[in-house]
Image (cartoon, rainbow, N blue to C red; front, top):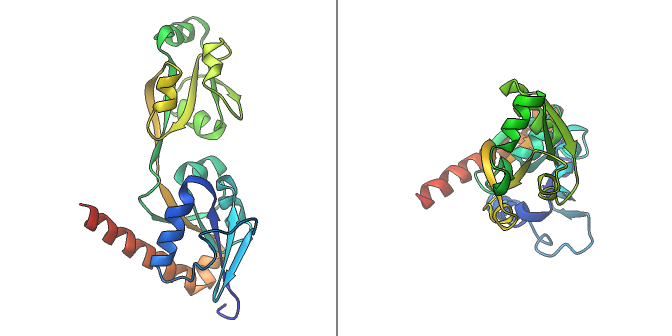
Length: 220
């Protein structure tokens, strides 16, 4: 396997800078990643960095477009793909929450008691469906792609399930958190075949786990 570059999927967006920094700490040549421009693949000695949308990192990894990669736990859970999750990297923390308008507090519970179903808007239908199934609550999931805060405000849904880091957007839209669904941090993932056959994947996982542990000790 060493006769070809190791292919690593790295996510654009909020995880990108910390991901690049960590991979550099792990000894990989990250030349060109600070400003990749429009390049989708950055090739350096021994490694190809494949720059993808965060939601696509598990897809590339599962289907062999990459040997391994990094994505949020939330993305991994939502994707529901057969990907090996190897290391909790401890950065990029955010959480999924159930929220409703402050002005309508408790109205969703009353509606559920009356109708036997809760209508929930979200960008993450798999996570939301699983959450309510575990609670034994019948939920009508409305999948949206943006501005889901509007859904309960205009009466289109009783509640929303959304991801938040600080809660600021929820507060600005006068929404209050009702429950926490899932906490999420960045994870190192791998293609299962590559994990079995390419020792570089295991070596990188061990190095990242060591670095993460050391970084935690430094911060504590």
